[in-house]
Each structure stands twice: as C-alpha cells, then as structure tokens.
Image 1 (spheres, one colour):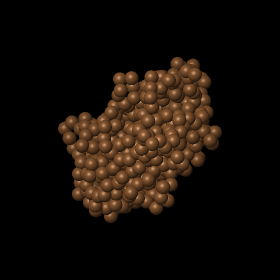
Image 2 (cartoon, rainbow, N blue to C red):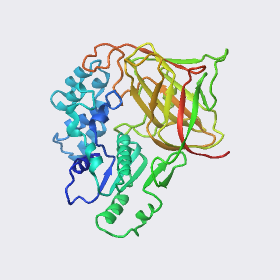
Image 3 (cartoon, one colour):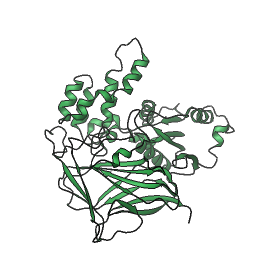
Image 4 (cartoon, rainbow, N blue to C red):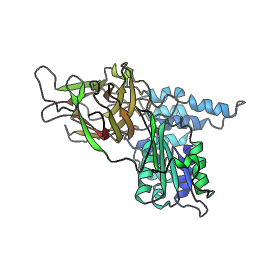
Length: 426
C-alpha cells in the first residue's frame, strides 16, 4: 500500500488533468528523510532492500514465497546489523543485488541530491484534489503522513485523515473508507452512505489508545495545554519539580555499549514484531533508565506530540538518545505508546539541555495505571547503533561505550512535556 501512496505523491507533483481524487494508505513522500531524518540510519531500509533484492527470484510458491521472504527478511540481516563497519558488512551481504544500499549508506544528508528523485515535497504544495490519508500510530511513515495532512490543511486543500492502532503491515479495515471516499469524490454519489456519515462532525478520525475508541475531530492535533512531568531522583515521574536532597542522588546514569546495544521492542518497525508490545524487558536492562509515576489518580488524555527536555551529559560526544512513553497496567506490565530517537550533534555545547520531540500519539492513561518514560542510548534493529567513535558509517572501524547522565534537581532538571487535551476526574 505504501508503494501506491508514494506513486500517487509522485503523480501529484505534476498531476494529470484526469486525476480527480486520491486515497493514500501509509504513504511516504521523502525517502531521504525516512532514511536519515534522525541522524542515524533507519535500518528498515535494509529490511526493504533484502526483500526487494529477492523479489523476482523464481519460486514454485510464487507470491507466497515473496510474502515469506518479506516477513523473514530481518532474520537474514544479522551480519549487517552486527558488523562494525556498516559499509563493509552491507557490501559483503548484498554485493550487487541492491546497489542503492551502498549509495544510501554513503549519503547521510537527507538533502543530498541523490535523494531528489525520491522526494515529492512539491506535491504537498500543488495538489488541489480531495485526498484521504490513512496511517497507523506505529507506522514507520506516520510522521510524514501527518506532515502531509498539515500542509494540505494549511493550503485549504480538501483532505481527510484516519489514524488507527496499526503498524506498517497491520493496517486493517480501510477498504470501506476507501470505497466510500471514491463513491463520493470519483463516482459523484451523494453522502448518504453509512461510512460517509461517520465524518459529519469533522475530517479527522483517530483511534485513541487506553480507552480503545474511535473519535472524529475537526482537526489534528486538537487544542491542548502542556502538562509537565519531572524526572525524579529514584526513577520517579511526577508533576512536582525535584529539589536536591541529602538522601537521594540527584543524577541517574547508564552506560550504552555498542557491543551489546539496547534492542528494539515493538514500535515503528517494518515487520510483524512492530506495533504495541509488552516492553517489560527494557526496564530490566542496565543500559536503560525508567521513570514511572505512582498509580494515576485521574485519567490523562494525551493528543499530539510529547517532548522531553533532558539535563543530559555524556563522557562521549558520539551518542544517540532513545526515549519512549509506555503505560504500565494494573498487573504491572508495560506497553509502548510512542517514542522518539535522535543522533546528537557531536559538536553540541557541553551540558546543553537536549530537547527531543516524540512521535505524535492519541492515548488516555487511565486512572490506576502508571505512566513510564524510558531513556536509552539506542534502539538496535530499528536504527543503526552508534559505535561511539564516529558518526560517519563509511569510516567506522572500532567501538567505544558511552556513559549517559541525567540531572534531577537545582538549576538542572529533566522533564517530559505532554500535550493534554483533557484531564478528567478532578
């Protein structure tokens, strides 16, 4: 489906006169941004390349083989994921089967001219037909789909948006919406259909986690107000501003070791192991910090993009940061809600706070559950791990661990900022 979405954005850059509407499911318009937008290479490009390189391989099982090849692609890439030199390991694995892989590794700037044929931002500026966008909260292209919606909305283009509880390959139940949209905008039929009546109160329909319900809105994101949650000494998370205390260490630290990188668990990944998952195992790792609230005394509804301001420092300039918001249920099990990732500039000023925007979400943290913030130095298998010696994948030949430290008091505090649409239960 994303292939068709990308193709339609390519057409909309110079739309034919007979193109009167479009339905784009989990669409992407900028592959350079997808590959290198965080500063670290998104390793799903390797998974896609593995699948594509074997797409035309003859097989008695035909399309079933191609589907199996896609679903098992990540398992064939251990040597690429684990190799010290990404250039060498990719060349050894792919050879001449996927020549674009070597070009992508060598070009870490999303603005490199190499990516221009794979970038269709012009379409967002010239499209003038009714467009329906469909995405998932755990989709690998969610950020770009929401960017498409926002830009088309700003231009007053007729656009509607559906975001469900899906990953990239688990999008479900969209055929009815697609046919209803086509009936209205292509066939010219009136809007009496049951599917279309669901849109009477707005052009955005989203699935809200926690309460597990669909809602119709007039825009995304809706009006919100910020709720600040501070990272506390002792790995707590609350609305109270922490102050240094004699009986608490006002810092927390962990060491990221690229020889044993922090693994990915669920989240936006190209494969069957993506999406919402139990991530209890992350909290047990020594290279992960968790900050968890007490059981909530009220429901907290988060709609939009959270962010973190971290009073952070490291003994190594070559580092990444992974942050995740999870919900801990009343049985003590944690499940991911949303996350963010960034490779930090090695020339950043020392001790400058790190500000990181997290992927947008729609979730109600219910009364009695707990909210958890996870902080780590990597998310292996989704992003190429930081080797700790250079940010140039073409020159890396050694590994070095990095110690991360967060501060929790005085003039250096760390906080999570949530876009809260409603706080119930007062």
